[in-house]
Amino acid sequence: MPVDRAGLDRFDLAILRILQTDGRISAVELARRIGLSKSPTQARMKRLEEAGVITGYRAILDPIRMGQAHVAFVEVRLSDTREAALTAFNRAVLGVPEVEQCHMMASSFDYLLKVRTADIQAYRRVLGETISTLPHVASTSTYVAMEAVKEVF
Image (tube, rainbow, N blue to C red; front, side, top):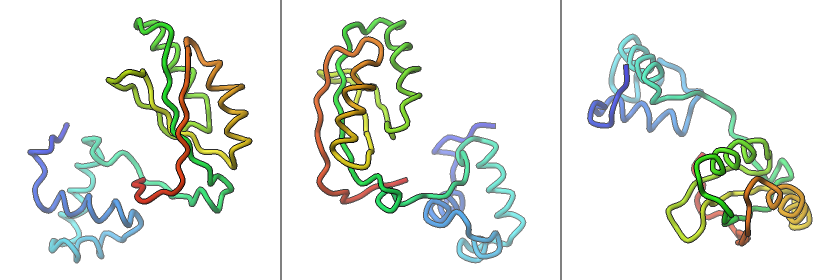
């Protein structure tokens, strides 16, 4: 049963806000913090999960400690933007582990990629050997991030 934003009450929004920052919080503590008992809190969580509002729980890794400190944003222009070309690009980019995010854009370019690597040399290899060879890539432009001021995971 889908839930739309209008169908979320203050308790649902509180649950979501808290879980975004502490996905391992106990149901008892979550219930205490939102002002409900444990059973209704768990029922709300289950409803939000079943509706696809909560899509999962995961560990958030520190990319710098994982040796992946270099971030570049890449504008990608395709040589063909018919549906078959877009589908081919979309499928291929899913297989590139260094691409953290890929967004189709309504802009002067077609896609914006967030690429994370160990350093500029590794990025150069990924760009030249992988990204540039994806289906229908005509050109790319790179913007290197100097510092992450805010990142939401």
